[in-house]
Length: 481
Image (cartoon, rainbow, N blue to C red; front, side, top):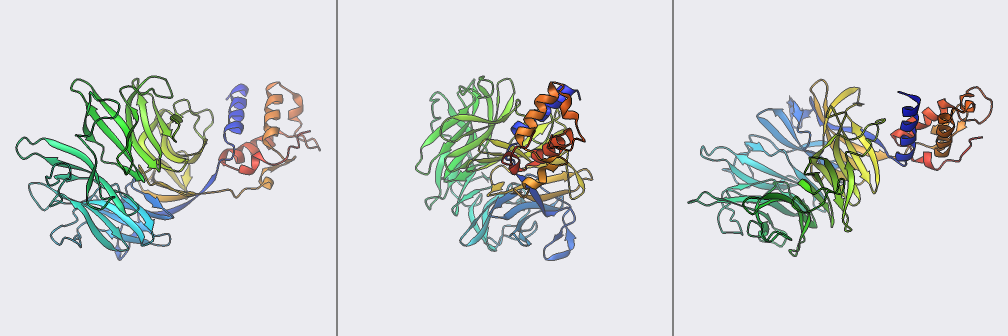
């Protein structure tokens, strides 16, 4: 790397990495983990994007084999089984757990941890049967099924249902009915927030701001935290589009962004697609790309859309790199903190990143190793991946193994950590060093001077600590002579 490029990279690091957190990693489970209650069985793999987190507890999908996909819960101390493939639904003896969707949800309340999931029974040779289940402290409850649950939209029994989102003990899910004569599918989003099952939105709901269009379908992943966050598709015949919308409990529908007339904040060109929302109260985050395909992560905290990350955003933890893409539905939000999966090095590397009220930092990326194992790919769940100072993610390694991890942010470094051979240095030291170095000032090469002159060694030590997240780096005193 040239001197100019090196200095530009150092300046970027010193300016952009301020107050980034450090993370410690706890392996929850993965390849080789013994299945609780079955010492002879162990996990082959885990579903990388399945980990749902709340208050230190993590629910996820683990695979004993390709045909044995189970649901597990780490309660902060130990791993337990929620449901195993081949088991029987305790509330419906005729329903066999043949498979589970890889998206699970969970929340911790006064009664303990509640895990929500979709189970499938393939015993009917003509069609699979599905059930939305929540399980709290070992007690499973049928919240809706495709056997007898009637859609509030049209009075027909659901033909298909998808995994639930949970908030305050209530659930929301996507369901479909099929007309027995025309075989037309009718799609909607449903909740038991007020008690009996009610419609949040369906194909008869007017498209907000676009009265000439009608909704045609909804994404199976629905976000729910006081407000519902939904990805919808709509059409007027020749034209089709996607929309991110929110719905309040009293039915107020708001168009957050759509692919017909919403400008993309990154380019000013309208969105070509919007995807994968998550909500935290009235706050929402989603992925989107403009009509030319340029992707990004965007949020609305009540004052309009802002950019969380796009193709112009420097990649935290990497020198002179920018994002080359994003997994547009691998993202979660809590308050004003957002976690997402970004891609760099022309698609060959990926990472999990935290946006904390304007500060972007790396949680982990595929150029690193955890526990001595080299990473190859990472995964984050859409909704429910962040809780307090913790983030849940899935990791794949070069040897083919996988694991679920819990990352916890910390601020354990101190000013003493930044002491090089010429004393403690600060961000101002780096700025002055860069200025002198760029101007070919020979004074910066005085590596053996018995004074407090900051050397290149000091700067590199400072940058390394500052880069990985030492908040004290921005508060310690200046001592550049």
